[in-house]
Each structure stands twice: as C-alpha cells, then as structure tokens.
Length: 358
Image 1: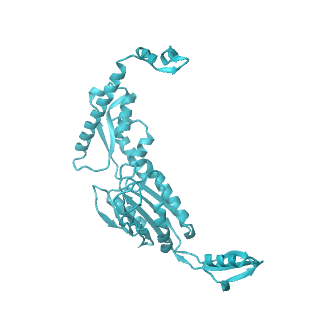
Image 2: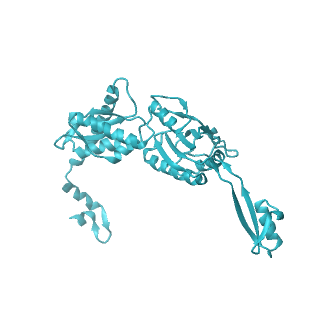
Image 3: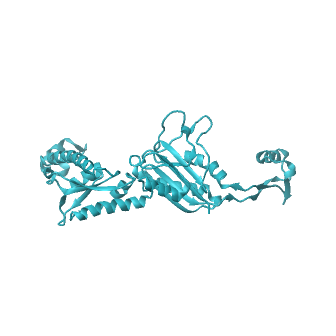
C-alpha cells in the first residue's frame, strides 16, 4: 500500500501552536487528497517540524462527468457561453430531456501529480495563528522560517516548489532530506519511508512523537524526584509545554538556595513555572523541597554539572526578584492601604473607593 510522507521543517515553533498545527495538517491534507482515499493517518509535531504520514491509493480513478447546459430553446449566446466555459464544441453535446448535456471523460490522475498540484496552495494558506515573513523576494509566510520540505510517495520524491509567478517562494522545493537534533546531530540525512524517517530522527536524537516526549518528560522528572524521596507537583500543562520545547528530553535536578526557602511555596512554584518552566517538588510532608526539576534538550558530556549550575544561577536571580516583591508587599498592611483609596473615585455622585470599602 503506497505511503505518503510530508515533513515541514522550520525554525522553532512555539509550543502552544504545535498540537493544533499537526491537527490542521492532518485535516487539510486528508480533505485535499480525499479522491486518493487517505487512511491510517499519523500526525507529528515538535519544536522544529510538523509532519504527516498516511496511506493513499496510487491513482485518482478516471470517471465520466455530466454537465447540464442550457435548454434546447435557449438563446445561441447562452449555448456559446457554456461551450466556451468547458472548452467544448457543439458536436460534444447531446440532448437529454430538453437540455444540452456535455459528457466528459476525466482520465485517471497518478497520486504524485495530484499531490504536487495541491500542496503548494495548501501550504500558502496554512492557518497558523501567527505567521511571519523573512528574507527577500517572497510573500510566503510560515510560523517561523521554513527550511526544508520532505515529500515522498511510495519512496519517491513528489516534486513541487513554492514558487508562484514572480514570487520565488524562498527557493523552497520538495525533497528527501530531513534534519536531526540541532546540536547533538546536526546536518541533513536522506529519507525513503515513514519508518526510515522515524528511525533516522531517533538515531539523531529527535523524538518525533509528541506523546512519547510527554511521557519521557513526566517519567524523567518523576524518577529523579522519587530517587530523592520527593514528589513532583502535578502540572499537566507544564509537561505539555516542555514536551513542545525539547526534541530529546533529558531531566535534571537542581538545588534551591536555603536563603529562599522562607518564601511561600506558591510564590516559588509560580516563579519557577512561569519564568523558567521548572517543576516544583515537595517533601513527604507536603512542604516545599529545596530542589527543583527541569528538562534539557541535550545530553551534556559532563553529566549535566554545568547545565545544573547554570539553571541554579538563573533561579537564584528569579527568586531574588520574587523575594523583593514579596517583602515589598508585606511592608504595608492591607488595612493601612485603605486611606489611599480615598483618592480613587468610585462614582462622581456616590463617593470614593475608600468610602465604598469602609
């Protein structure tokens, strides 16, 4: 059964856009190639690519189409317009029920020809929530600069380009070259099948499946925390986001400076999650642990010592800011702030906010 593979490789895609983009790619391609009976679709999304694998028929079957034209009694101009529209002559018409009818035979269309015809327009209309232009000479937009297009059917390249008239489409054309991890396995490699693509990416430190990356992120931080007798504060949203930031998830534990442990656990967790995408940890009694978990997109040669030290340094700066604002908020009691509301108008005829809250 012929297999179709499409990979769109670009610069880093925001994590929040990846899942929807994969679903849109699946939907749009499946709808566009409906005459080829698409089935067994598998969509993939990651920091630098969205992709789709599915099975297709080898050809769009030929068929006969009937177009009903004007009535037999219609003016000659109406009949001439109908013939001009369909590129036909009067000899091609037959009379059926008082109407001129054109029967046309549509030849079978090979799947590669159909794919090459439809994909350029589909990519130009792809519904990213936000997209950008780059370089010169093209109005083609993508969420981030598009670098490569892998398009294969039954192991062969489906040739097409994004050129559109005078627009050079950034010189992008389909091929069979993909890329692995930006740092751990840079460079291009050739692809022939979907399994070849998945295996090639994994060998080059890229997990193509978002679901698998989520499991690796969750299991990785949980295993490290458990080893220390700690637990991870549940946060499915953070797991999803981190899985969209890394292609090769590697979990680490860092330490929190004791001078920040007096901060409320909620303040620490928000600072870690929002600013750094770190996972907060708890001790067996539910109190904040002096450790944090994070996920890197690399396998450091030193076992992570430098990466951990760098993240600990960044977190100290974040917590210093958090401590400053926490202390600033506590410097004045809420009751002492009421007098300041006297200067805030609640309603011109009703009085101030201060009068309202007293």
